[in-house]
Image (cartoon, rainbow, N blue to C red; front, side):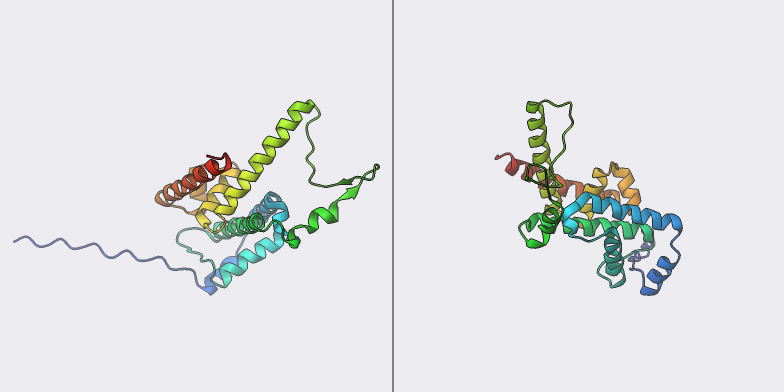
Length: 218
């Protein structure tokens, strides 16, 4: 009688890093790491603009660190480096802020920037810092079409980002694509498996198709 094959040992479940491991990772960040983290935060603040609500890139980094330290967000050191984990948290939080503004545009907290920075021109008209500046080569008709198209695309992008604001993996993919990254680069950068990537992509595609239909009245 043949002996039964020995079953493989159970796969050890990955554990979040301890507070001590996180503190050590912060202490050992290199100059290159800190520059990369800072640039990621600057890019996110520039991307979400008014949704930052007076918060700086330093505030964004601090919020990301706080969430990792208090356990709101976990770092799995056997999957991804601390730097990549922190950048992922920065992207996710920026997406949350953008989503909050999209859902609450009329709140006074989002009205300060335009009113504070608006100025009066020589004709006594109020000029907003967010009034779009067009290329001088465009004629009046082309300019109007360009403005309408840009406004429509921007509104749709904001809705898509807001819809996935609380979906961490989807937010990372969306922001990565906006920054010109491809799928393999995003996966490598944030320690995402191929299965996670494909599942998240399908989730995004379903949501975007639905929103596109609503956007165009279908």
